[in-house]
Length: 123
Length: 138
Picture (cartoon, helix red, strand yellow):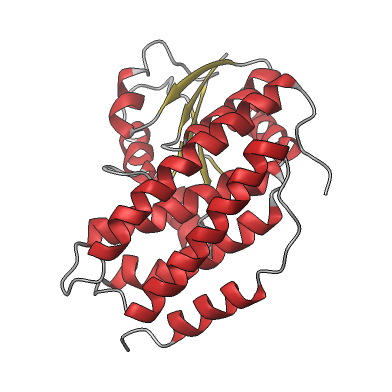
């Protein structure tokens, strides 16, 4: 299983990568939407993309929309990871195609719980 | 406060946190004065906002509470500027500079000792709150 961690913050990428690696994922990292799109090769329905909302240039919502809109049936699970906590923002992310939503700051347990939920839904 | 650094993996994340924060502070020192100009670029406001936002997120996970609270207050004070545009008031710029100075000191505490020094940030937070609520006045 592969997890692609997309966040412009090196600290947040390191934190999330360490957690998802501990949960058994092979981790890839990207600091921008463009980098993420270059690192999607080989990702399938058992894999995950964890996307920060607020990034310079194109934001995470754009990436979620683009990935959700792919004709490919085997698209990876999409998890929005963000400090945007308003209900309207959560609804916006889910409407754009995010399968789940994780609020920062998070705990290891919260990440594990969300990833387990995503896996269950995608079996 | 106990150090969150309990193993080499966390120590490496803290090193990244310190290095990234220093870069952000240097960037904020350059960008903040530009926001005082009338008609300042919205993308510039978004960049300054993102600086505080990034620090808030990583400090929260690492358990650096003073940093998290100060960064959150800075982020909240900048939200109207990011969302609605406009220029920064001189009062808010001064309050943000004071917050950044405190955040720098806290980051250097973490770099040196692995923990934040104890302290009271009430005055800095109050400054931010007052300056943000009187936005537009200079």
